[in-house]
Length: 293
Image (cartoon, rainbow, N blue to C red; front, side, top):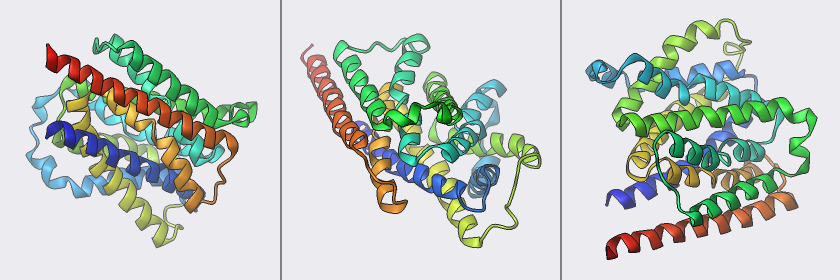
């Protein structure tokens, strides 16, 4: 049951993260500034989990562990993503952030967690990586987009650090729920005053929609699901699931934002599906081998 629930949690994460990229792309082109959306995200989450904060045993982890877990999926990640979305489409953000997670995740799992990966899984990761590059298209990696590329790749590195630390230090979902908002509100709130802001001029619809999705759906529901899945499946498998996000983001951005799917993106979707199928089959084969031992 834990295995089934973990895979279901990963599927939920894919859809939530696709929606997050799409609504964030919309948000940064509204009157709200990236710092405003970041503040709304973590302050809303903090209010929602405040009863858990009082009951949490803070001596459970050290300060540097709280900081790395909290900031890995915290304001450095969101600010890099939001400013990157100013320069690139939602589909391209999905490629550069989530599409790179299998690569970064495999590297980190090998060096930090000593997780071994079979050759067929490396093949699947390679296909998914190439599929995401195809989806990006030729113009994405032009000099005019270099700042957006660097920002979004930085976001992928931050998220990889978060996932590895969860697995390394055995954080439970309740630990993550209180760690992320507390760490980020305490550190980011003073910094918010130094960033451009239109929070008090923004419409109530923009404020509510960003607060609800960013603070509750992403920072509570998705974090719970991700922590549970990483505990039972590991960082590499969860990273593979996250690499589906570019596909679902491209489709969602087509429907909600009118971002047209070009030939590169359609080819990337097909290649990504092939890579995911190979990775899934490798898991089934390895599970059968273990059961026969």
